Image (cartoon, rainbow, N blue to C red; front, side, top):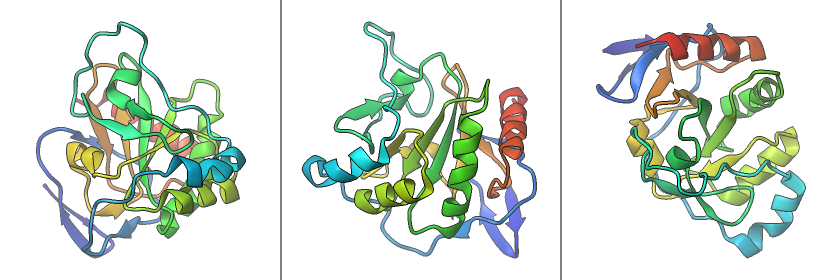
Length: 210
């Protein structure tokens, strides 16, 4: 499927994660230039002061003895941005719905959207919001979250394992909805959310799309 956005034509990959959750019209995400998809892993000692200031919510953790998770994210373990340790998102969120937002500190539209996601996350009945920080310096990522007073949990993706599993298109930010069965729905077209209500509407579409 070919999708034209603001004069830019992108070829969306086929297969999982499935496409079709349509967001309200808004600011167009930033198109990425060619470059490495990998990034440094967090340095726990160096990041300790920033982590204290950021006060991010804990990354999700799997229940003891939980069965293996399904879906495209199964078995992928990535560092938590807000605290030492690694997390298997598929296992930690097994049986739950969540909103996954791919972002970077150097992405202007991401910086516009993060406060909206933080407001959405505070709404009653909202899905848990998990940031996936990519192609970034962890210190820069924490600095942005501190400046924007956003506290929902984020992970980093130093080896681009999540990007590959999600078949992420070359835009930032990009948002996915994780279903309870482990399947993932890409919110399309890729736009920057301007209000928490836009997020809620996109989530509703994603959870009913098949």
